[in-house]
Image 1 (tube, rainbow, N blue to C red):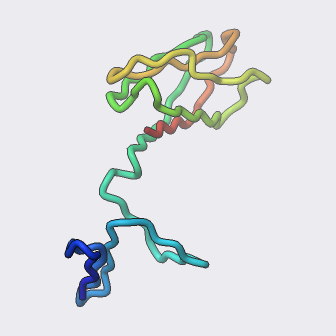
Image 2 (cartoon, rainbow, N blue to C red):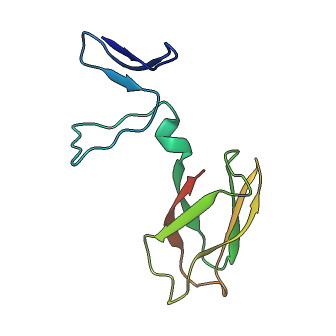
Image 3 (cartoon, rainbow, N blue to C red):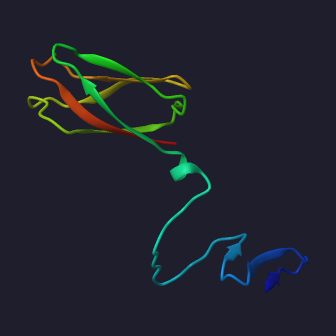
Length: 116
């Protein structure tokens, strides 16, 4: 089944498998999912885990998905000694640098998540 606009263009379709396609936006009161999948590899995101070794203050994480507008989230999995782990710099299409203000005497394991 297809729906066409006044110019004859298909703006919505529903196939025999129950798959719906719309060319515009969809407004609903409630939306429920069993699974979510995208064609853009998790909406352009990339995730990983790293270890900032004891005595180190910075480390570089290579990732070609980094752009000037990339959002990078860091989640420590071990103590940071009360310090904030932060993104000290981004190099587009190369990667990003993670830092602490002062090196620690213990390793800091953390997850990172980049979103474009």
